[in-house]
Image 1 (spheres, rainbow, N blue to C red):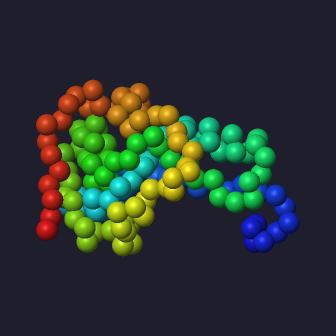
Image 2 (image 1 turned 180 degrees about the vertical axis):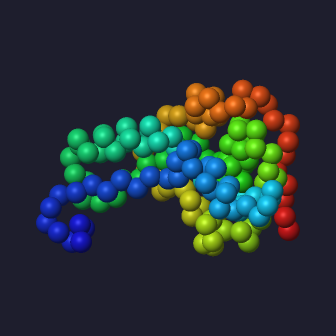
Image 3 (image 1 turned 45 degrees about the horizontal axis):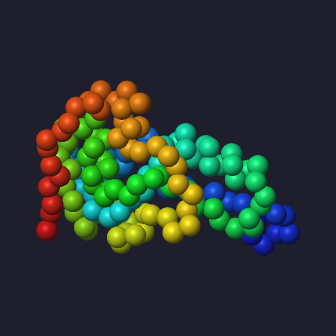
Length: 148
C-alpha cells in the first residue's frame, strides 16, 4: 500500500541484529547441538540500525527500499558460534546445509544485502567486547563442526 500511494516514502530493510544470535541458536537447537546453515550473513548492531533509520528518516524520501547491514560478512554458523562462546555457552554448533534459517531454505546469499547497502560501523567482535559478554575477551580455540 505504501509503494502504491502518492506519499513519498523510504523503507529501511535491516539485516539480522547482533543482539539476536542467542535467539537464532535457541531456535536451531536440539539439546546441546545447534544446527545452522553455513550461509553468509551480514549482521549489525541495533545501535547502527537506529543510526541508519535516523539518517534515512531525516533525508529525502527515496520512494523505495534502503538496505542496511553490518560492515562484515560472516557465516551464519560462525556468527552464532562466536556469540555463544562469548557467553560461555558450550553448545556444539554444526554446519548443516539442510537446516535452513528458522525452518526456511536459504542459499549462500539469501541473508546478505545487495551491493548498495548502507553499512554500519560496528564489527561483531567489537560489539561482543563492548556489550560485556562474559567470555568476549577470551580467544576460543574450539571449532565449528560440519555435517554432511
